[in-house]
Length: 197
Image 1 (cartoon, rainbow, N blue to C red):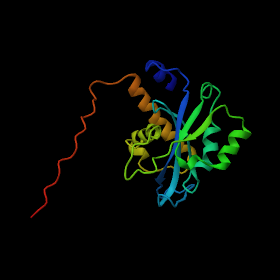
Image 2: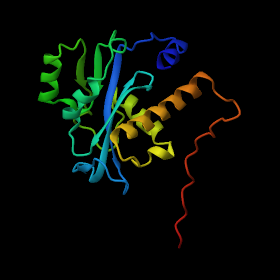
Image 3: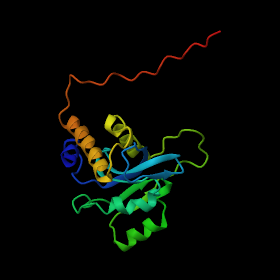
Image 4: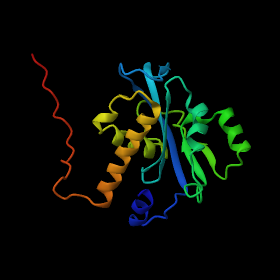
C-alpha cells in the first residue's frame, strides 16, 4: 500500500531516503514490558519509527522506554526487507543515532545505506525547524491523532506495533481515496485572551 501511495504521488516505489526517530509514551495498568526514560521523565515504552520521504510508515518497533535510540535502532533496521532497502541510500536521525553500537552493526551487516545525523544549529535558541528531522516528527504528530495511540494500552509490544500499523494503513487509505465530505477544518490560531483587570 505504501508503494502505491508513493507511485500515485509520482515517486519511485522504493524510497532512496528514510527518517528514523522514537517517541516515549506512557503505559497503562495493563502491565507488560515497560521502563523509565530519564530524558523525557516517562515510565512506559518507546515507539521507534522508520518513515519514507512522504512520512509513510516503513517500520515500527516498540521497546521498553529505557532503551537508548541508537541501541534500539538495529532492532528496527533489521526488519528492513530487500524490497524496502532496494534503493535506500541514507537514513536521517537526530543526535541520539550517533551511536558506536549502531555504527558497528551497520559495518557488521554490510548495510548498503548510511545513518546520518541532522543536528540543530549550535547557535539556535528555542524551537527551530531542523531540516530532515521534521519529516519523521510530522509522522509522529499524525499518529498522535489516533486515540488508541494516545497511550500504550497493550500488554505485549507486538500488539502495540500492530496498532501503529493499523493507524498507518488508515492514513494511507485516506491518501489513496480521500473522502471530500470529510475535509479538515482550516487551522486558526487561537484568539489572545484578555487579561482581567
